[in-house]
Length: 414
Ligand SMILES: Cc1cc2nc3c(=O)[nH]c(=O)nc-3n(C[C@H](O)[C@H](O)[C@H](O)COP(=O)(O)OP(=O)(O)OC[C@H]3O[C@@H](n4cnc5c(N)ncnc54)[C@H](O)[C@@H]3O)c2cc1C
Image (tube, rainbow, N blue to C red; front, top):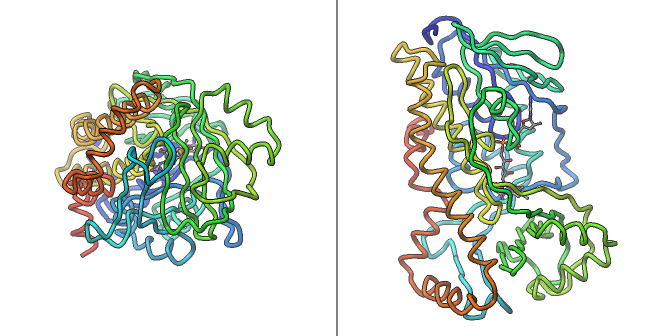
């Protein structure tokens, strides 16, 4: 492999939020050798963000994600465009959030202004695309997908859908949960198909969302309401796929009736509702995150259940960690694609990602256990809710405030 201080090309497969963030951190923090080029290949067209309409896909972004974007100077841009802070989070099972089986988190309890922000996927991508366009050594090609990957003694060689062959020192796979690169590189995964599908839509409500994220655990899976800046809430309703199919086939009125019942009327009368989208849920974890010349990030390395809204947050931490390790490789004179460099990144991220993945999977299973387990769950939720220490720890962990990956970024931002 070549040393990182020679002219190099770093290729990123996938221009989703994680791939674009890896590229942005690499070019912005000047950790790379001067004549290193970062090129992103994205199979879809460039995203346009619409200031008048809230995009269909949104993410609950943690403080850790906020700090990563802030280190690029992009957090204030996003806030100035459209984002909704959530300051409370209420999680419950059974009749209502005021019952025994409930947890109530408030940012004020840990002296924080909020517990995170709801941000549109299209806004995140658009802002990152716009940012990368400022750098002469960054290039994003849309409508181009990676079709083949081959290891060479200088790094990696790729074949694209346009018939181009591209040589690179390192290939960063950020091509999502069904990662083509991961398959082409023969990197094995542990996967679990829970036969669940998430239904997503934005809905108006009689009662204001009051900057509160709500999540009700039902025997079929969790139903979340995330507050949007336009006053509506974005629902993420995880269901067995057959039930999701049945609900998808309903008219808006029929779907709203089902949603009303499932919501336990926590936001009063619901409706009207936007167009609905659906996502098959799969838990995937790559057993190895790297091979010589190639490395996995974001959902290509790990897809987690959306119940805790952490998949993107974990992916952005991957991006920050990988950018830092590649910067270190350059200072040490190692090659970007050296296995030792990529393994350091893998060691720093794998345990964290796996812990979260197993925790969300266990939570999902726990709440889908039959009704006889409900009293035990109520006891557990009640005990956590009464323990200030446990709640503070959970909130700080979810915000990612103390994450070690953020330390160099805090220095950059200072
Ligand atoms: C319903 C739902 C709700 C969620 N809510 C949250 C939340 O609130 N908070 C949170 O943190 N996470 C959430 N997540 C998880 C989050 O969506 C993912 O973790 C995140 O999208 C991963 O980002 P990524 O960039 O790794 O992958 P993706 O967003 O999947 O992007 C991958 C990109 O790669 C491109 N691509 C694919 N194949 C190729 C190829 N061969 N060549 C070139 N390009 C390719 C794709 O077009 C795509 O643009 C949710 C997930 C779901 C399903």
